[in-house]
Image (cartoon, rainbow, N blue to C red; front, side, top):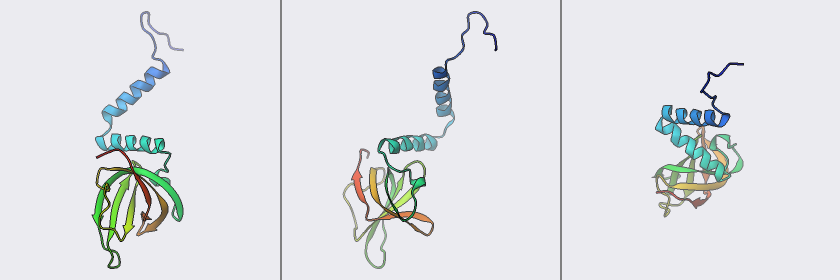
Length: 135
């Protein structure tokens, strides 16, 4: 065991953990910190991390809308939103809709539905959703 000089004490596990968190915050980029916060809020919502969502399975996801666009699909309007939870993104698509009140970039959202893959991207069509705090 290492000897501690007189008048000095060793850091407890809790102090070292706090120091580690402080140093990580100081060296992390803003994007990394936001991703970590989103991941924590996803756990609090009891939602599945998007990175863990399997195709052809129903999942509940939560995160922040990055983009919202109107894209016609097969001649019909479709509102598309990209949801980010700190681990990955999923496209939420509402077929036949041009606008949905509250669906705006920066908005927190919880969505539930069947996950599918299109062109290698995760997509959820006509999900049930709940607007959460934010923008």
